[in-house]
Structure formats: C-alpha cells, structure tokens
Length: 312
Image (spheres, rainbow, N blue to C red):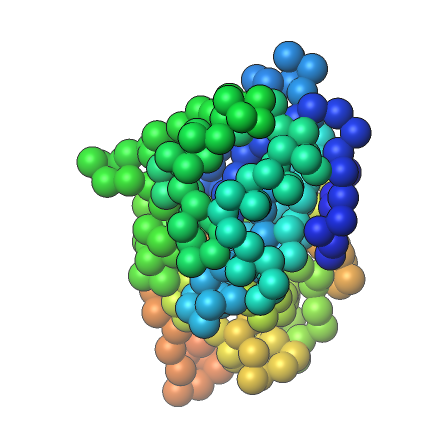
C-alpha cells in the first residue's frame, strides 16, 4: 500500500476509486463503505482511501482522543488490500478550500477519481459546506460516479464513531465489539514496570499506550492478548489505570496477567483486546488482600474467556 502524507502536491498515476471519511474506529459502517470501494479494484481502479492526517474535530478544538491511531489505521487498510492511502494535511489553508475547488483540484485533477463513495454525513471544504449532494452535482462535469453508503444500524441506532467512543468511555466492551465487528484493542511495546506482579507470583505485561489513544475506564477487564508477529493468542485479565506497576505513574497504563503463559515479553509488541469490564480499579489495604482479589479475578476470568472461546 502506498501512503501519501504531509503534502497536497501529489498525482495518482491511474484512475482511482475513492472512499472519503475519517475512519476513526473502522466500525461496521466504515467496513461496509470500504467493501464497496474494494469491489472497484475489479474494474481496474486504484482502491484509494482519502482521510486527514489529524482528526478534524481535534483540529477545530473538539475531541482529541482516537479510537484508532494512525499506525492502527495504516495496518488495517493494508490488510484489507487498499492500494493508496492519502493522509491529507488539515491546516488553516486546506480547511479554507472551497468545496468546489476541492473537488476539481484534488479529486478530479490529482486523484483522477472515476468512482467516489462516502456516507451521508460527508463534510468537506470551507465551513464543511461540501456534502454528498454537492459531490454528486459535479459528477458529470468531472467524469466520476458517486455511491452513497447508508449507515449500518444496530438495535435501531446508527453505528458511528461517536457512538463507539461513548461505549468505550462507559466500559461497555461487548457493545463496542458488536459495532466494530471485533474487540476493541490497544497495542504497544511491553515496558518494564515495578515488577510487583512478579513478587506476587503473577508476572504481568505492561503497556503505555499512545497519549491520544482512547482507553476504557480505569478498572479490571477480561482480555485476550495477541503477540505480534506470531499466531499466539493468550487469555488474561488487564488493569487499566495509573498504578501499581506502570513505569510512569502520571500516565494511564495497561497491566495484563496472561493465563498459562511462560516466556519473556519485554520489548515485544502486543495487542490487548478488551472483552468485558470485570470490576472497577480500587486500592487495597494490604498486599495479601490484593493477591486474594487477583486470584478471584483470575478464576472468574478463566471461566469467562473459556466460555467466550467456546462461543467462537
């Protein structure tokens, strides 16, 4: 997959099929849109995703936390078979571009768009005045066709990044899983912690996620851990919080105990998948009380993840 980033001065070598969106979370609605895009590869078009290098809401002073980091998006698009990913620079100059000029300059002249798909909430150009109606109005003039991809609904409500984000913030990980089509996950490199888990006979793997990655509420979760670069997947329990074993107590971290795992994960990349909220984070009066609670968490977690695997 070719990645175009940090520039507005680019030209695609062939006619393209373009999907426009923010793609934060890459939920079922996004997946529906991307599946339609990928069908155009059979017509000889470059499957191209057009998104922004930062979240538009963050640029305009709104939401800064991301469901999906830039690296996670890149990996997901590459795995799907996207040919070109354009991470368009969002700044004062590009944000002030008239929607009509945006269509002519970038979609028509630079990207040679032959097919463009987007959702009904499409917004682009100065003041967000560009929408799907405007995009379709210029289709004949610039020689492309458009396809409106309707929203996916679950329980009668539209699946959106906003809805997914709210569910993550509330710790409703089963609901998040339904909207994403897979568990919500956080990846990173295993860091050295304070080794408290090791002294309790329960060694843990510690992550310090990217600062802008949205985490669920502090507490204990039933999780699965994928060890990157291998096919190995381990069940476990994870604590989200500032203590006790992350290396920087001013940052939220994820501390995970893996069931029946032996080996050294320090410096390895892992991905933690959140399956279910188990209990809130709490401070214990003694190490023994903590150890007793962790043992109970592990027993309950083994039962849950066993049932979860059996359901697959």
